[in-house]
Image 1 (cartoon, helix red, strand yellow):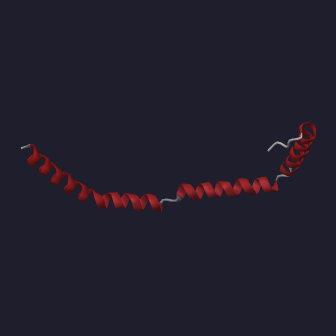
Image 2: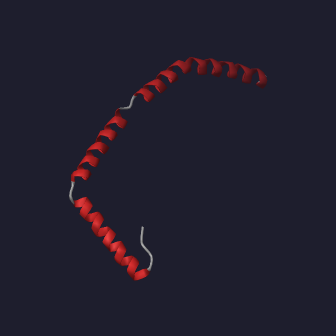
Image 3: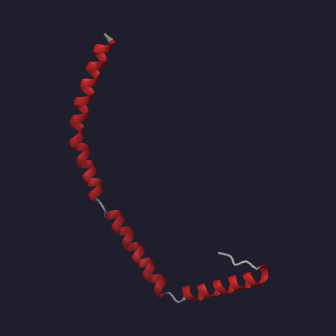
Length: 81
């Protein structure tokens, strides 16, 4: 009796699974097509990179960092990353 019940349950669950496939595929297609968050992140990244490129403080800070690394290298014989 348990075997017959298991077979019947398997048939029902298979039919239910097959019925849910189109909906799952539609949801997958919608998720793949929704690139809004990626586009917004790309726009924000472009804005940040543009601001950093035009900011005069970054080259000066990079120069000061390199000078501090040079001093550290002279004192210890190793240059920090």
